[in-house]
Amino acid sequence: MSRFESVTINTLVNVSNIVNIIYYIIYMNMFEAGICPQVESAFVLLAKKWTGLILFALRGGPRHFAELKATIPELSGRVLALRLRELERAGLIERTVRSVAPVRVSYELTKKGKELAEIMGKIADWART
Image 1: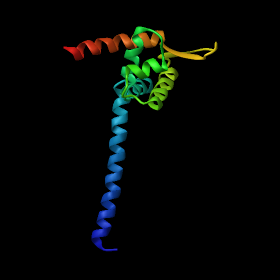
Image 2 (image 1 turned 60 degrees about the horizontal axis):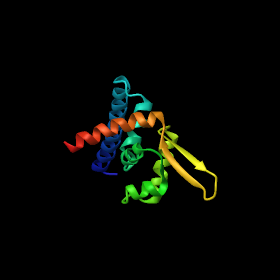
Image 3 (image 1 turned 90 degrees about the horizontal axis):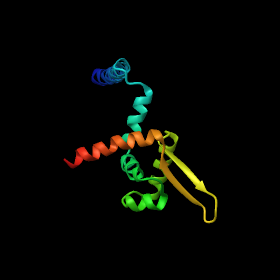
Image 4 (image 1 turned 120 degrees about the horizontal axis):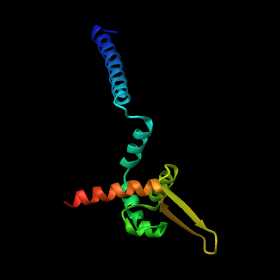
């Protein structure tokens, strides 16, 4: 191994260590700044594409899957189903299955979801100005 190769490998190892140290410092700063895991996970969920529009669409009351899909036509059915499950797990929406033929599934905001949707409404107002 030449001296150049040795320096390059050592440099890469040192850079990798520096990157890990930087990530650690950022994480500790977030922790010290009061960003707890619940807040972080909330922002991660809200940052996902379509989440805000789905919550905004549910502000008007319960909606069926097809109604949500029609409200946001660019959103694929697969991604809509995925986001609805994530929002349900987060306690923001409630899924109701009506078992009378034909089976109908509707989605509606929970109390927590309505509080967030109210904030989303203010964001929409802000965007319009």
